[in-house]
Every structure is written in structure tokens, then in C-alpha cells.
Image 1 (cartoon, rainbow, N blue to C red):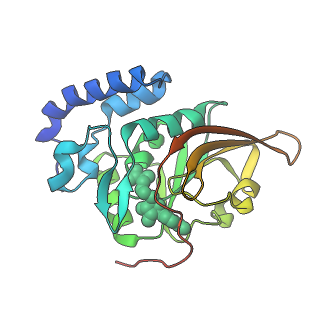
Image 2 (cartoon, rainbow, N blue to C red; image 1 turned 180 degrees about the vertical axis):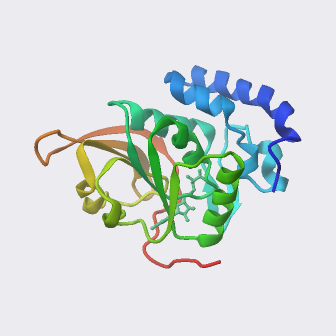
Length: 222
Ligand code: SAH
């Protein structure tokens, strides 16, 4: 695995250029920009891909999955924080662990689910290297969330279902939010928010995006 050093100094400058680009592309939440400026993105990729870490593209992480482009990570995090601070957050799709690492310092606790165990194992090692210790990991199918730990102040899915699973909405705490890409051919980011005192969900449809599909069942073991 790439170390925190090595590419480190070089990538700090590159990272600040990435932050300028994100700002130019409309990301305005300073908390998100600050965390992304400090988080080494290259350690979330295999050595052969690390040199592309700060390009504005999604990159392969193995098993047919991808690390989302920086703008998408920034935008989803910004949406998650847009309606107030969040304590307990459920993430569906740990993947490389990069989105998890961006969330970790911004919330109290992250509970992250992944169906492909080897990906989650690597993500965990990267987080340990960064001393992120408010993350818990579940190797399970996140299509219907994680009932045993509900309710959540926020749920973020980094894989796209064709339709929003009702169980994800049901697992939101009062005033909780769900950030999720939705759609088959054409996907849009969606922000759902639960009202404080009724079981009513408001929905805002945001930008077009392209995510890997949320897959039903079929766990992959190490
Ligand atoms: N947030 C990740 C993006 C990974 S891509 C990152 O920053 O790298 C989406 C991830 O969702 C993949 O790792 C995929 O295996 C996972 N995934 C897809 N369907 C899932 C499901 N039903 N349950 C849990 N994880 C799922």
C-alpha cells in the first residue's frame, strides 16, 4: 500500500489545485473543502493508479467498482451537511474508503457497509493509517440499510438503486437526511429529508451523476 509519505509532499500541492477546481465548480462548504485539502486521496488507490488520484475522474478500485470523482464526493458530503450537523451516519458502499475518510472528521460516528469484503479490509487499513477511529464496518448487503443500528441522522449511498428503498427512509431519525444517487440509465443525486414530527419525507432532485449500481445480495468474501 502507498504510504502517507512519499507522494505526500507532491500531492499536497496537487490537492490544493483540486480544491481550487472544486470551488470553481460550485462546492462552497468550507468544512468539506478543508477536509478534502487535508486527506491524501492517493492512498485509497492501488499504486498503479495513485498518480491519477487528484484528477477529476472516477478511478477503478478492483472488483468492477470505482472511487468517485472528487466533485461527486464533495457534493454528496456538502448535501449531507446542508440541513444541519449530523452525528450518526450510515454509509452504504465503503469501496476504497475515501468517502468514509472525508465524512469521519465531519460527523460523530460513521457506520459503513460493504458487500465486497476485500475492499472493506483495505479501506479499514487505510483508515487505521490515518488514525480515524470513529468508523465501524459491516460486511453485509446494504440495499435495505442496517436495521440493527438505526435510526441514523444521515444515510449516504455511494451506489445507485433504480428506486429509493423505503427501508432507507424508514431508518432515518426525525429531521434525518438521505443522500443517494437514483436511476438506471440516467441517475440523479437525491436529497431526502424527514420532517421532525411526522413521517413525511421531502425530496430535492439534484445533479446528474454516474454511479455503479446498488447490487442486491451476493456478498463477496475475502
Ligand atoms: N464510496 C466509495 C465508492 C465505491 S463504489 C469510495 O469512496 O471508494 C460503490 C460501492 O458500493 C462498491 O464498493 C460496491 O461494492 C458497494 N455496493 C454495491 N451494492 C452494495 C450493497 N447492496 N451493499 C453494500 N455495498 C454495496
